[in-house]
Amino acid sequence: MRKRIIGGTVALVVGLLVGTLVLQLRGTTRFDDRAYSGSSWSITPEEVFTDFDLTLPECTDGRMRYWAGSLELYVRITAPSECISQFIAINRLRSGEATITGPVILADTAERDVEFGWQSSSSRNYTRFRREENWKNNVETQAIADDGTAERSLYLHAWHQ
Image 1 (spheres, rainbow, N blue to C red):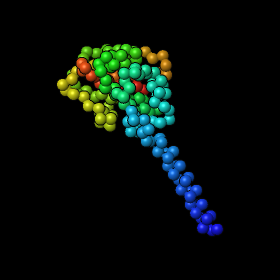
Image 2: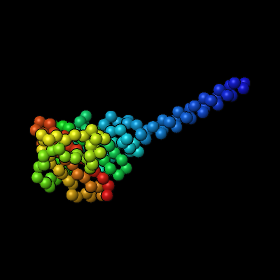
Image 3: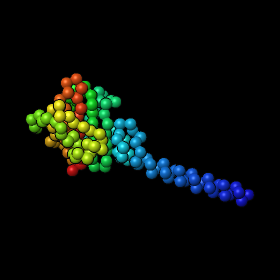
Image 4: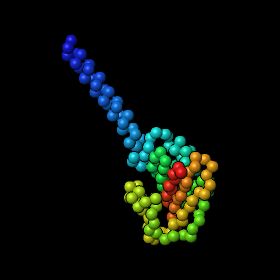
C-alpha cells in the first residue's frame, strides 16, 4: 500500500511539473511556422495583424515571416512584385524618399537585421515607405522594399506609440 501511495504521489508531481513546463514553453516556443523565434504567443497571428492595422493579401500566403511582441511587429514578405505592390497599397504605405542604394538597415537596428537573418544587397535599390495616418491603435508603420522586378522583398516595422 505504501508503494502505491509513493508511486501515485511521484506520478502526480511529475504530471504537474510536465504541465507547468509545457505552459512555460508555450510563451517562448514557435507554434506558427511563420513566426521568428521569441515571437509573442499571447494572441493569434490574425489578432496580431489586426492589432497593428495591417492587411495581408492572399498572395502573401507562405511568403511571409514575422516577429510580434506586445508593442512591436516585424514582417518580411518575399513575393512577386505585384503582391508587394498590393500589400503597399492596401496598407496605405507611402514613399517619401528617393530610391536609396544598399546596403541598408532593414529593421530598426542592425542587431535586429542579424537576429532575423535579414540582409540587404549593395546591388539592389530600396525604397522606404511610411504610413502617415493611423486611425486605429495609434500605430506607427515603416517599411523598406527592394527594387526586384519579378520578385521583391518588403521589410516592415510597426510599433504602438
